[in-house]
Length: 111
Image (cartoon, rainbow, N blue to C red; front, side, top):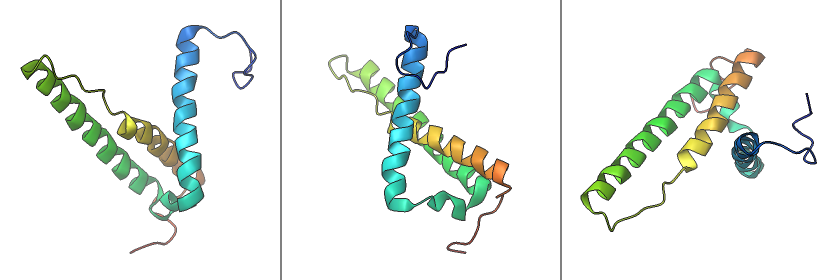
């Protein structure tokens, strides 16, 4: 099996598209982490799961509402906003990292 981190390999379109989305999530994490410096650790994996749920629920409401608006007005076409879904990838990773690090409730913070 080829090393998927090698960008020179010829990758099927479905794998390339999947990797591009994961790369987008990683780039979002890097850009925001420069500012926030792993602030998610303050709430642990439970906090990451809570934030993940909020992101998914927000995406659910936004995307379903956009679909309803499009059904009502066929001339109205809105590009779906996937920011919350990209963020949810990162929050899932935060939860996994917190679980693996044994950080259930956080390591200090606002409480």
